Amino acid sequence: MNFFKRVLFLGLISLFIVPSHAELTISVTEGMESALPVAVVPFASTGASVDVSAVVNADLERSGYFNMLAEQAMTSRPSSAQEVNFKEWQALAQNYLVVGRVTNTGGQYDVQFQLLDVYKGGQLLGYKMASSQADLRRTAHHISDLIFEKLTGKKGAFSGRIAYITSSGAANHQLQVADADGFNPQTIASSAEPLMSPSWSPDGKRIAYVSFERKSAAIYIQTLATGQRERVAEFPGINGAPSWSPDGSRLALTLSKDGSPDIYVLTLASRSLLKLTKNFAIDTEPAWSPDGGSIIFTSDRGGKPQLYIASSQGGSEKRLTFTGDYNARGSFSPDGRNIAMVHGNGGSYRIAIMDMASRAINVLTSGPSDESPSFAPNGSMILYASKKGGTGFLSAVSIDGKMQQKLVFNSGEVREPAWSP
Amino acid sequence: MKLNNTVLALAISTLILTACADTEDKDASLLDGSQAGVNDASTSGLNNGSGINGSEMGGSGMYGSGSGGAGNLGPEFSDPSNPLSKRTIYFMLDSSQVQQDFVPVIAAHAQYLLANPSQHITLEGHGDERGSREYNIALGEQRAKSVASMMKIQGVSESQIGIVSYGEEKPAAFGNDEAAWELNRRVEIDY
Image 1 (cartoon, each protein chain N blue to C red):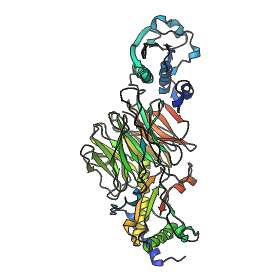
Image 2 (image 1 turned 45 degrees about the horizontal axis):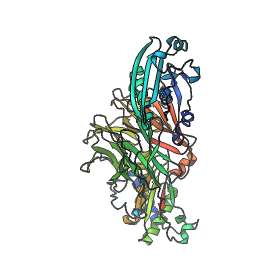
Image 3 (image 1 turned 45 degrees about the vertical axis):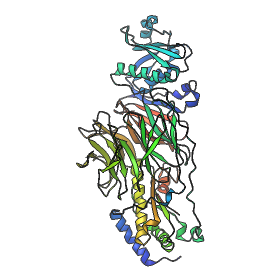
Image 4 (image 1 turned 90 degrees about the vertical axis):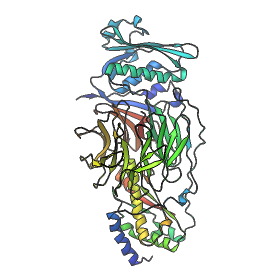
């Protein structure tokens, strides 16, 4: 399989759009040879503060599925299907064309776009939507989702958000939430002591995380809209690895209050604790199956860390991984068919995926210190943390390992990404 | 510097004990004096255009990390020839077993704690960056517990010892090589 390398510095474009938020650069480091040629013509616009078509173009490019036509190569700038001369786009070897316009309607905007099939000369999609100024980027991501789904048959993941931990210096730790394209990063918690392990509630409205702000570990649940939070676990020892149940009612977590770290399930309404594992070894990093019936976790009960599965009611513990000398931090794909994990072998730690049916492990990344895999809500990509030259950054890889994206922040260490549901 | 040979022998035998299992330690007293100088974190609402109502709650800025304070320790703690001057215990990869070299250091601190029963310490467990973060938290705690059980076997009261694990979150050395990693796999004895 041949890959071609290309680099898109979204950040350079972003400087002209929202300078104060341009902190993240995303580059596609590996894409598919078979990427579809698509042209997004700059939308006709009356004074919109966001270049909607540029956001759509960047989203589609970043997905790795498409080979986007550069603006300079375009020979005309149609903004509706009626203005399109399809022969002209056929001559440019484009399969698909996106045209549109953004119209200021006095405080609001009308955004309309059409997705056209260049060779058939017809419309595949056409939408007109109203958007406030503040929602223009979100509207653009929504358009990207619609186009992506139409052309690939898979749900787009451009409208989601990512949570992650960043540090600048030893005494400045922040939990941030940004759009899936890295824009609009907002700090939702900051502390002089470490913050860890963000986990989204299934409705995307709250985040559970670990904070050492009181000089010991505690688990908090914070509501994004208000910033209000609640301390839900502060037992002696480890309070770690929170993971929200699919129905949102419970939190799986790690506590060491009885001696060794074990997996517990905390029912949020009653605050009752169910102790799931009772082993003298390390048991940690619980993650729920999408049906809520099972929990996978990391345990070194066999000598080295490996993944195990148990009933979320307790019992029926079974070892899942046997390949490699280190398998940890498992998480289920949204369809429950695969598990992503940190796979260590010979001192190199990579992201791998295991097919639950065949138990075959497929290594997706090159290491040497990749960690914290998190599935995109559509299951097509895995976001993870990587390190090179001492700097931590985020990357995404498609679940077949064929596409890679790198997300680079201008400063500081970025880690523990979690893709919103 | 004088080391009681029985203490040393005891300490070595503890090595074997801790290697077998750190089992029935009930650490109900671990969360204790470390609450002094409480650090808050500041939080903010998410300022988001749509769907979510972004009423922003003003975060009140960052709070400095309250230094634990070395307190009034005697001159023996700064005398390089005294094992009390060493307050970091280093570990092998993926291991919470105390290495022979550090047995006298732990024994010396245990002796000091026995002689000063009102003295409290916190054992901070740490790991290197390799592997997953929450697993490293667990490993850091095991390291701190190995040191704690050696001290307890020498008679130090459980109430004198607090334990916290930071895993790989507070590296002593930055870098992605063995030189940095071996400095980060450690337990710090905090007076």
